[in-house]
Length: 191
Ligand code: 5GP
Image (cartoon, rainbow, N blue to C red; front, side, top):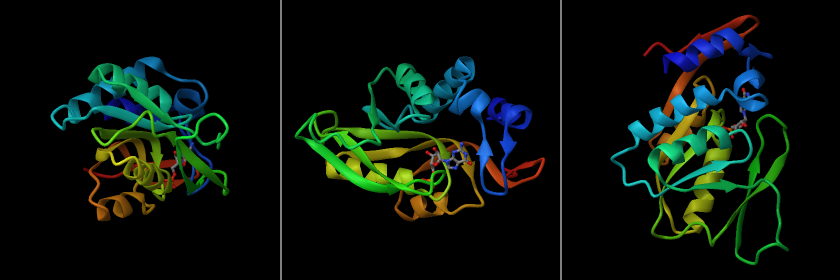
């Protein structure tokens, strides 16, 4: 997606060879107009897949995911990173390793929000090692839902996430694919 690639080049900052900072338009301050364009792109790409719900992981996936759900006229369900067993007895949980924090968290969803009738589009901001997406898929399978695909804003193609997900038969659609990061360097995959 040209618009997203231009924004990444203008405002993204490679912290090192592995991590891209996008705080000025995705992770901290949010460019709502860009998020709407992203939602329209995902909605168009997945329009014939029989998607019944959009699912994302809090918190950075929420803005693009809500726009996608709006454009597809279906609900958005947000997977939580905090265990809250007291709030609800019907919680499904799975442990996920965090790429940026180097720790792990309990990805959580209420079984009341997803059912076996759901065909789900997962949206997330980044794809690195594929741990978050794989955890989300595990939870959806625990809820007996099916997965229509994975929509990613920024895929770091030099990390193994895409391959891991494609090995599981998941359709991965990324709007920007980064081949290389370095000091003052952001290189996209040539399509
Ligand atoms: P994965 O689970 O695929 O290894 O990592 C994906 C998650 O880690 C994303 O949900 C995102 O929050 C975070 N993440 C991974 N790489 C980056 C990065 O380069 N920059 C930022 N800001 N977040 C990242």
